[in-house]
Image (cartoon, rainbow, N blue to C red; front, side, top):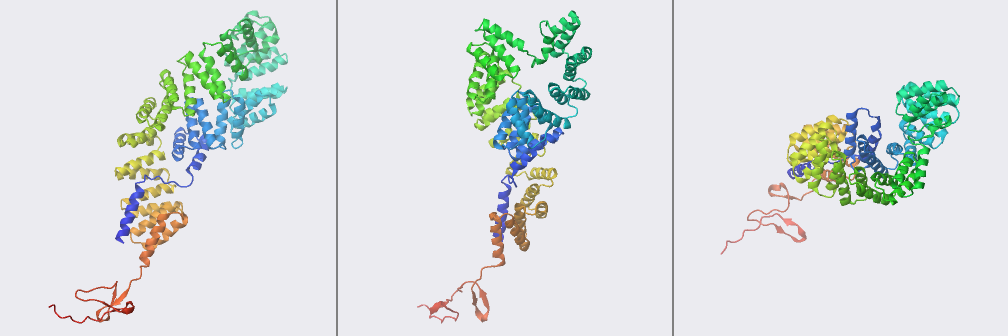
Amino acid sequence: MPTLRIYLLLLSATLLLTGFSWNLGDPCKDALELASSLDTLHDDLKMRETEAKIVGQCPDGAAAHFVNARQFERVGNSDGAISEYRHALRLQPSFARASGNLGLLYAGKGMNDEAAVELERGLSAIPDAAYHKALGRILAEQKVYALAAYHYTEAARDLPRDAAVFSGLAEIYRTTGRQDKALEEYRRAISADPNAGQAYLGIAAIHLQRNETDKALEQLKRAEVTTPENRDVHLMLAGIYEKKGDAKQADYHYLLGGKARKTTEAQSVGAETAKAGMSGSEIDTLKAAIAARPDDAAAYGKLGHLYRAAGKESEAISAYREAAHLNSSDSDVYLQLGILYEKRSQIDEAVVTYKRAVKVNPANAEAHLRLGDLRAARNLIPEAVEAYSEFLKQRPESPDIHLKLARIFARSKETGLALSSYQSVLKFSPKDVDANREIAALYAAKGDNDKAIQHYRTVLAQHKDDAEARTALVSIYVKSKQYDEITVLLKEAVELAPDDPLNHYKLGLLYDFKKEYETAAASYQKAIALKPDHARSLNALGRLYMKTGKLAEAKETLEAAKKADPSMEEASVLLNNIRDEFNPEPRKITKGKKGKLKKGKKSLKKGKKTKIKKGGKSSNKPAAKRPAAQ
């Protein structure tokens, strides 16, 4: 029995020193469920705590990349967010929230075809109003009016204060000739937002179609107050004043609209056909200039910008290519061409074009960044490092890019460079949870426990439920035998998640190791109460019962552990030891002097021998005295 107790004590120590890395169920599945609920959290602290928990549960899974994408979005790095959403979907193609959010980003970049696909995937599982709104706009631009109206209507249910939704729906009704319905929706837009300039502009257009010039003028004046920078408003005003014979006001509004004076009302009203502030006439003007001077690289570049702003990507690519062929000195031409190539997954072409962008202008930070992202995606580490470093020369206050570099160096085992990059992140963002957690891991690997503890503590100060940081701290404290600190951490874990049996189990192990058996038993029992088939807690409790001599209870508990997890070898070993205690191996029984029974094997007394008879039987008769030695 003492030997068994020593074995159990050593086994407990071994389990404790593992750093408490045991998990139940599928943590990545749980992380996905949490990730899908993030958009329902409105408390910023709670949201960030949940994000930390997700990354801690499954750091390399789809949910963690989803969290990374959201964080990129928060700092305005839409390209980084797109990359992370794509990564999440490669790991989990059915991740509807990732698809929907990716669709919104695509829509924001004018990638309407890609956006429509991802938004539809998102809506297949999540009726998100923002997805409906974005898809409604895209379908309206594609003139699929019935579907567009449906999605705008669905969006309006949950976005009653979003004027853009009602204006979008009104535009569909106006385009399809349902002017009364259009007016109704425009008025709803103004009710939602009195500064909805597009709604006033739409109402004015309807009045002009009905030849109600004064009513149109009234609406346009309201639009001018709310959106004075809107060129269409000024051009429509100019057309009305020109029709009224007020040349001075007409010239004034034509000037504000950025146009030469029109000669007909039709031309002034035609400003509505302008898209993104660019009109067909500007494109025609540039085309005429190019026809006169076909070697004008600058004109091709401007033409490409106009096409891109109008959403005509194929035409934009053609124009940019001509500008590049003529060795344009405009770095932005190459940058925009590269972006369009990227959108079409023509990565090699994009890389070449970004290189030309930085050659023309080494200070083009955006081109360096995009080049770095493409190099990193292809695992071309030296090239990625070079591109990111050039970007940081232009924009050193970019903690997200310093973090990218730090992770590259950490993966490449260049610890010194990684630490330097992490320190740069923390210089600009000292409370960055990811940077603190990751630099702490590097310090721990180097054996610099004081600095590791400092950074892990920074993480827990912001996110108490960061499981990764808490587990790492426990591991450090275990190795340095700082049991009081471990106790505090594990008690906090229990307080944070009192319904998690794993936390009670870990706390029980600590008390068990400290030989506080009653407290340990209580922790194990709490874990079992929360999850009756928690095999590890059942096994640990059975082991504790053995150490304290409660063999019957130990047998029952260990059998429950084995039933909960038949593959648990320790439970089987302990059960076998209990059976040995209950059923000792039979031993031979012999008769001694005076007919008394003795246990044990054949024994020899000093000065006597046991004779062995034929057949293997022993004789216990006293041996005859021998004569004294001569």
